[in-house]
Amino acid sequence: MDQFWENQYIQIAAYYSVVILCMVVFLAIFEMVTKYKNWEEIKKGNLAVALATGGKIFGVANIFRATVEVHNSLLEMIGWGIYGFILLLVGYFIFEFLTPKFKIDEEIQQDNRAVGLISLIISIGLSYVIGAGIS
Image (tube, rainbow, N blue to C red):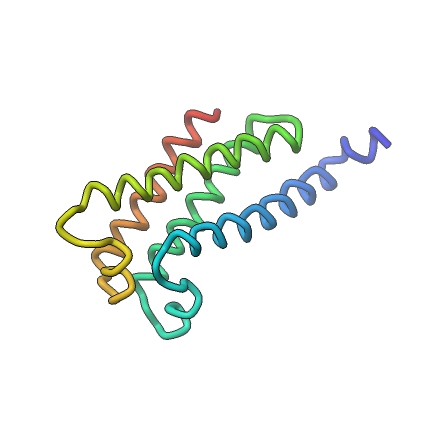
């Protein structure tokens, strides 16, 4: 059985499957903390929501990229990925806190593309910092 789990193709499939599952769970959590429904807004053509959501997807994937590169066990990868996601989520709340003149969620829901773009860049930027810390 050890040879089965040591097979590189099996490991890649396992990492891939776990990351997809985590991505779905993490996006559901992001949807719970935002005031808008991501997929409904994207279906309506809201580019700001698409940018912000894309940044979150990239950010989570980038964090898991770093965990896969460094950790040898699936459980370690999951643990560090969850930790990285929590840090990314904290970054979202800090972004909201640091902009007292307007509400990030409301601006994104109203298709303010500038705010959506900044949200994307913050998610991606923080994911690089988090990933570097994990490695």
